[in-house]
Image 1 (cartoon, rainbow, N blue to C red):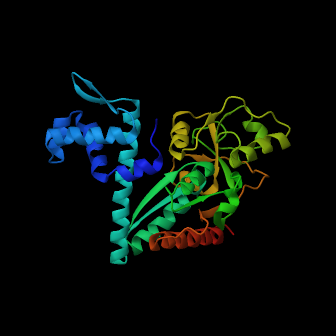
Image 2: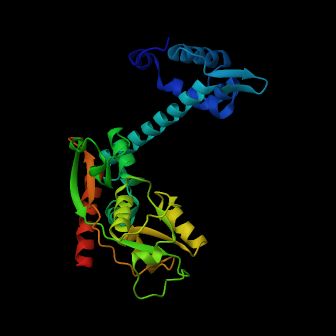
Length: 315
């Protein structure tokens, strides 16, 4: 029978997590014991206590030493996560005690990456000791990470959530979309394009039901065109640019900010196609009523400021 959560919490200790991580690294009790300055019998006893806590063996003894079984791999993964979270906790406390620095975890959807990097650059100039973790993914995934406490804030959209009331959100800026391609794309030098000109091209898009994908599908429908069947789906800006670099016939739908970055650095060109649909705005999202560190509040202010500057630039 699997022990209850309360039982695990009351019996599991941080030192035991260190032993698990060491066992995963060394694959032997002797190696783990040496790393943690324990005797081998002491390490063996501690491992027995850990396995009793979880109610199942975690390692298999082989000729090569100790190898984690399926449950062992699971426990090791969470042991490392807890160890990392404790390191981040210490880093934030040090920042609070110094009145500067600290650590912030921020999520971002692909189109808002240039906006976020502008904000982080401004913050780092003011607080050079601050550490920032950036997670790029879809709005749905970023909101789930906020729910789990893995992110302090995110630039995304709450419209994809069935429970948007769980979040506080602030408008950052409207998103305008553009189509980009390899600079050697056959239509790169055209002055004007219609969606029909690109109907037979292979598109790089977000997966189904994501706001940007829905918008593109609507554009094809309104133009009386069949939506392309053979797509390349990704949420990664790097994967998108890498694919464009490798194939001069691909096209991708991105935010104007991403398109501008690509054009300025010569990694892609913006095709002269004007879309009629308006994309959803970016929101700066936090968990409702969740306390925010000074570093998180500082980054939030920088993001709102970067959004305001971008709006003035485009007006």
